[in-house]
Length: 145
Image (cartoon, rainbow, N blue to C red; front, side, top):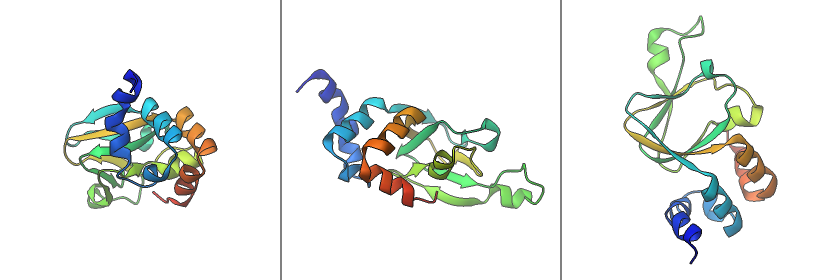
């Protein structure tokens, strides 16, 4: 086993537990693992918000919880609506798929509910996988989050 494949093994083992990664070819799993950056978010940290503009990264939650919740930048949002989670994402789930597909900012603020570690993939590598992996492309095309 090469040094690179030894270093990637824990990431690939993690990916094997979740769709669509478990069904991707070994070459595509390795490409993904090679280009993921591990990032830490403390409880209540904002990961993404509409104020950050067009998203340029794809996130896979390694551990922890992330909430997608309304933002206060709309006239119709009350403080209660802004703090109520629209969805809670857990280990193995991905975000912000729709914003990446549409090449736009997120509609919802994404916050760490507790200490959270995510794998982060920059848009260039996300786009490459969309073009090269039919399994990844189909999964992303069907996802509405």
